Length: 128
Image 1 (tube, rainbow, N blue to C red):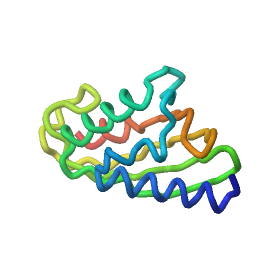
Image 2 (image 1 turned 60 degrees about the horizontal axis):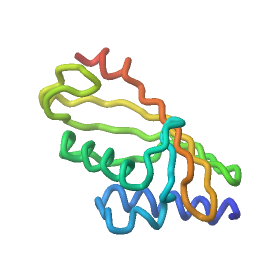
Image 3 (image 1 turned 120 degrees about the vertical axis):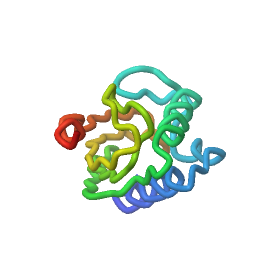
């Protein structure tokens, strides 16, 4: 895929997440996707995202930085949210927190086959 095609794929994926359009998640994510080097498959990946949206009702993925180097994508995402209860093991209980996620994707056959994510938990801790 070209840089333009990968950029379009990623923007479509983020739109799919923000709309919680789980029926189309498989258009972007491979059936045997890995997440942080663990085989989770599409069903596990979807379950993880659905859990995130249940725990964070105002969850919106905002792209801050996007670098495309086929077949890989690197993105810095920003979140400004009010998680319910505990979040990363921290007692957030609806308090507003702002943090970033650095996430890398490897595309195979037009879908994300490998995803690596690092979330800035320290930024959340500093806000408590």
